[in-house]
Length: 68
Image (cartoon, rainbow, N blue to C red; front, side):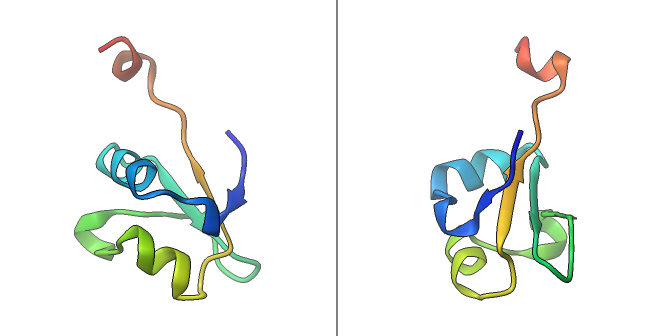
């Protein structure tokens, strides 16, 4: 798990990470912030281009989720 530039966030990565509540975004003033589609309503394109967030990371899966 490491922070990457928000411009690297792909639509596929966004959908999977948000579905599993594992997407975290941050900037130099705010963060980290766990993205939740129910409360945030973000889409990957908006996160990349709104200028608010600089970095993102995808939290690792919990052990029981990884096993299926």
